[in-house]
Image (cartoon, rainbow, N blue to C red; front, side):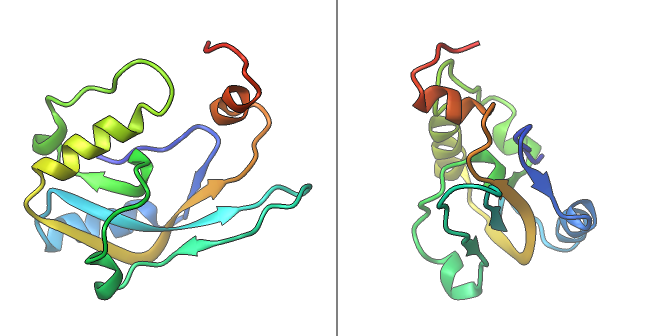
Length: 130
């Protein structure tokens, strides 16, 4: 199972790469390499996270649920809490329960920065939850 935020994108080979990994290497969690897409305006640096075997051993710092694929059996009883930053407790519980964690080094997820109507932008402006 993978997650996609409504304001982000995935690469054209996202499904193919996910299926290849699922069919060749059993896992509980598969971490994904990703890139940012900066807005056309503003001062936002572009950065990317390309996983390698060495980086896969480092502690996680990205607790967004979209940065991983999950074995359905691992997360079938985990629920997202209400509110903002709901990814953090979900991912923390999934990672805590995972025994087999792997990664895909090809870029698969494209995280869009500073999308005006995104939940993150609304939250940072102090606007109420919808």
